[in-house]
Length: 315
Ligand SMILES: NC(=O)c1ccc[n+]([C@@H]2O[C@H](COP(=O)([O-])OP(=O)(O)OC[C@H]3O[C@@H](n4cnc5c(N)ncnc54)[C@H](OP(=O)(O)O)[C@@H]3O)[C@@H](O)[C@H]2O)c1
Image (cartoon, rainbow, N blue to C red; front, side, top):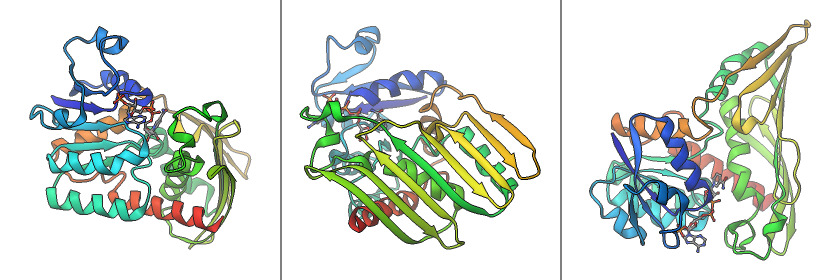
C-alpha cells in the first residue's frame, strides 16, 4: 500500500484526495497545509489523515512513500528537489517548473537520488489518449492538428491567484503543457519551426496562439487562454480522413470520419476520474523502481518547457 503525502491542500489537491479513492493500492496518509486544518471538510471526514502545518515535517515523515506536489508553479522546483532528496517519489503538478534550466536541475537530482519524478500531465496519461494514438494511422499522414484550451479566469484578477501573478501567471504556464503535450504525444515528431502571438495585459499572457511546424510536415495550431472561455476540442486532419476530439484534455469520446464515408464513434469511459490514471502511473513507477514514467518521461517534460519558452519569446 503506497502512503501518499500531499503538499499544499488547495483546489487540485482536494480533487486528488477524492481521485485516489478509486485505487486499491494507495491512499492519502498525510497532508501538509499551512492554511488548512480543523475546518477543512475533507480532513474532518478523514480523521486518520496525519496533518502537518508545514511542508518540511511531511517530508521528514519516514512513512510517506510518495508526494503529490500541488503548490502554485513557482514553488514546484524547490519542493520537488527537497522531496527527491528525501528519496520520496513525486507526482508534481504542471507546469513542472517555470523554465527548462530548472527542469534540468530536477533531472540531475532524479538521477543522483535515483528517485521517481512524474509531471502530472493528466491529459496524456489517459486511456482515451492511448486509444487515439492507436487509431491515428487510420487517417493516414497527419496534415494538421488544431487544439484549444481557453477558459475565462478574469474574475481572479486582483486576487492572490497564481494565474495573474507576474512571476508565474499566464495562459502559457497554465495550459501550454496540455496543448504541447497533446501534439507531441500524437505526432512523435520534432518541432522544427514555430511562430506565436501572445496577448499580454499588465505583464501577463492572457491569450496565445502558436503555429508549430513538425519535421514530417504536419502543422499544429494551438490556442490557450485565461481571458475567454471557448468550447474545448481538437481536430486532427489526415490524408485519409479526420478525427474530432471534444475535450481533448480528458478524452472519453472521439469521432473518426474517413474520406470513403466511414464514420466511427469511439467511447472510453474514465476509470475513476481524470486524475486517477496519473496517480496509478506514479504508483506503478514506484513499485517497479523506475525513476521516470515511460509514458511521460523527464525529457518529455523538458521538451514541453523548451517549446513554451520559444512560444513566449517569439511573441
Ligand atoms: N485547479 C486545477 O484544476 C488544476 C488542474 C491541474 C493542475 N493544477 C496545478 O496545480 C497547482 C496548484 O493549483 P490549485 O488550483 O490547486 O491552486 P490553489 O487552489 O491556489 O492551491 C495552492 C495551494 O498551495 C499552497 N501555497 C503555498 N504557498 C502559497 C502561496 N504563496 N500562494 C498561494 N498558495 C500557496 C496553499 O496550500 P496550503 O495553504 O494548504 O499550504 C494553496 O492552497 C498549480 O501549479 C496548477 O497549475 C491545477
